[in-house]
Length: 149
Image (cartoon, rainbow, N blue to C red; front, side, top):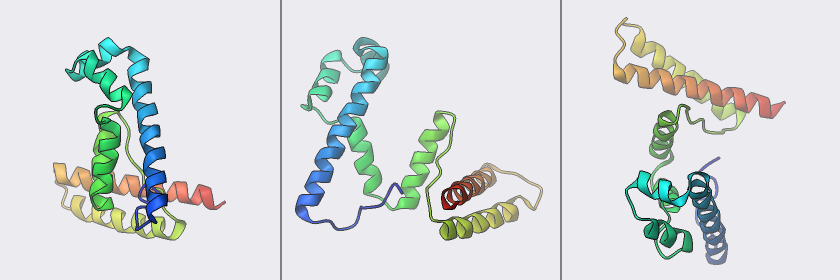
């Protein structure tokens, strides 16, 4: 689960996790830069190649690490919504990995809410959000079922 391990940790364990996470974020950022080249990447972000190099060297904050910290700072439901928005922008959707019982309860609840909002025959933008949440919950249930077998 994305939010596992976010509770209170011992000082050394928290520091160790942050350091490994920091390096992983830096590696991922490097992959983004390398796949298109530093000039093209910098241009697409509207920053200089010097700024990209400063991020790669650790002298400037890494946007991936910052995004993760932003998501860790909020409640999981809000963070899930932001992650789902990003996934939708890239043509997909986010599904939280849950245990089988939690996934089943969540799927039933989300589907009931979706049915309730579309039962009047009028489908608004908010109704579409409810339907998407139901689909995500059903996807989570399918994943949980696959893992349990």
